[in-house]
Length: 164
Image (cartoon, rainbow, N blue to C red):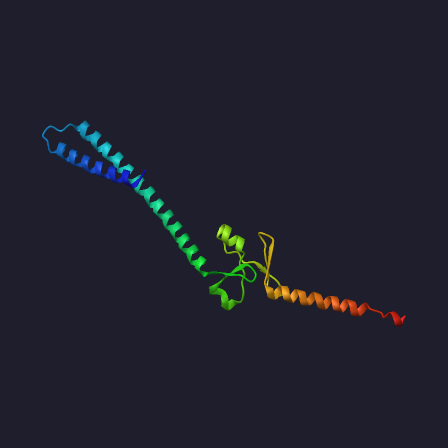
């Protein structure tokens, strides 16, 4: 039932109340007619109450949706896309260090899901999508570590040909 139906039911109740009042002012009161009008008025009042209850619930739902949209809008304004790495960070969390947020979670579902970090900076993994994001710093760090590891393996196991 809509708010308009509730308003119409209230209007009909007021009209019936006036009719009943007029009937009660006549010398020959038709008790059954008055009783029927009172019953009709009660039905209209119940309809008005139901309509107002439904409107109250709908208004509550709309307020909740509006609040959620305002929250998402504020979060969207706080999210900053980092080209180096391809993930999001919150501007409001800059002082906490880098907390990376999955771009797929944010853009697809509008959920700010923090990603798992690693011991070396610049490596982040979304546990939902199983995707890894790396910054240039991490890629360079990994490249240097691999080169050092390869250099150490070559030199530690090398026995010169002339030394045999």
